[in-house]
Image (cartoon, rainbow, N blue to C red):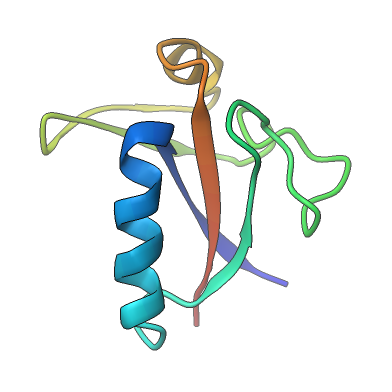
Length: 88
């Protein structure tokens, strides 16, 4: 299964979940992590902070950086929620 990753602080996660549920064709949710966990059921054994080839880090609505390891970005929010979104 191929998926895109969106990780948000817990404070924003519900709003995104609601948006995705109301727009299932554009944002089909495949899996959601527990807050603070870098793993999901679908990506069992994977570390979502390090096992993806490239991450785009957005801050204040702007692309801030592209990195091959998102551990530092996840450390900024200890309550990060990961969404795996289906893609074509």
